[in-house]
Amino acid sequence: MDQDYATYDDDKLLSLLIDRDNRAFSEIYSRYWPLLYKHALRMLKDENESEDVVQEVFTRLWQKAPHLPSDTSIGAYLYVSTRNAILNFFSKNQVHHAYLTDLGQFLDQAQEITDHLIREKILAKLIEEEIEKLPPRMREVFELKRKQNLSYKEIAGIMDISELTVKTQMNKAITTLRTKFGHHLPFFFIAF
Figure 1 (spheres, rainbow, N blue to C red):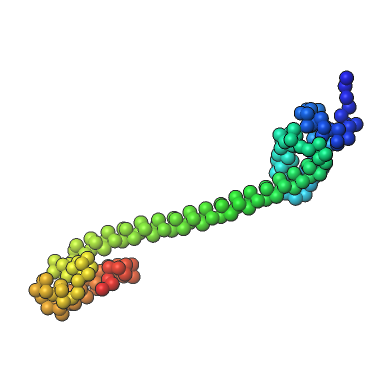
Figure 2 (cartoon, helix red, strand yellow; figure 1 turned 120 degrees about the horizontal axis):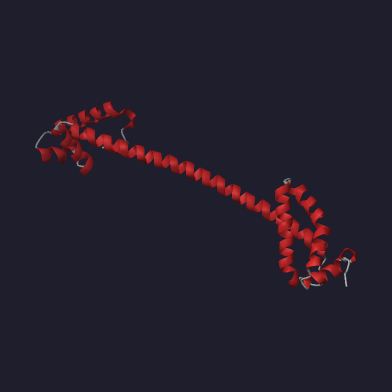
């Protein structure tokens, strides 16, 4: 008993589809695919994306068919499903685009931060090496001030020298370091 599904109306096709009739699905597909594709293409302006969206709509139709109410308008259901799939596509692409933009900005900033930290470590090492090259008394004054944050008076007491000598030694140490490193000398080395 060969039936011509093309003569069936949408209600009859839906009834058969609910019962998992493959031929009813094929008829609905051939009846609505061109209309849904044109609608998707008008919205998405891309043939491949439009095909993907419509294919997704029909895949979901087959999956959900047994649970559809028998009074469902198949045309309206497919149109709304296509519209929703298009909106989901736009939403995913916006989220994807926003994610890629944020990721790009993060990577740029991370690269800048990493580069800055590496340069800072190298500079700190070079400065430490130059501090080691200072004359012993000057280096001791400088390190007592820098590492222990002692006042000139306290340093003078520890080293048994005058405060003026401490100040002079500090100024010479800073001048020597500035001569070598200029504006690259980090503030925390000379913030006294």
